[in-house]
Length: 166
Image 1 (cartoon, one colour):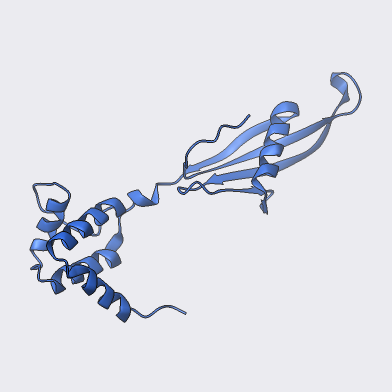
Image 2 (image 1 turned 90 degrees about the vertical axis):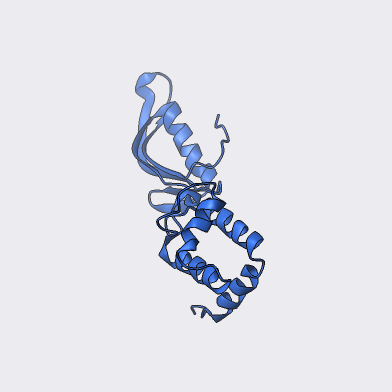
């Protein structure tokens, strides 16, 4: 039985030795094949699977794992836990855009870091905006918009000038 749990942002790969029964008794166990099964659950809860490197239905991969556990052998060969995308820094391009918006609404450049720190409830100015997480950047954005309502319009105007990649 498999429990449904929340998103984990994890990938696991197993080798699964599959056996079947051919008659009665322990000696009637017959080796069928070895398969490589990979299951992935991303941060949004989307689950995907591969069997021997080919995309497969998630249920089919789970079936092979269950079969291997019941009548064969299952060995975990690789596990990779990925960071939650919301915990990654926004990076230089988004920080640059935030700086440009702040500048266009009238926040002097040296005050960008203090305004951002105030939005996050910190007493010391930040050293960089590029290291903000997504959640922190949203708090800074909301705070900026509450102090400078024109920020939304400035952001729309800047977005309209950015060429869309073909």
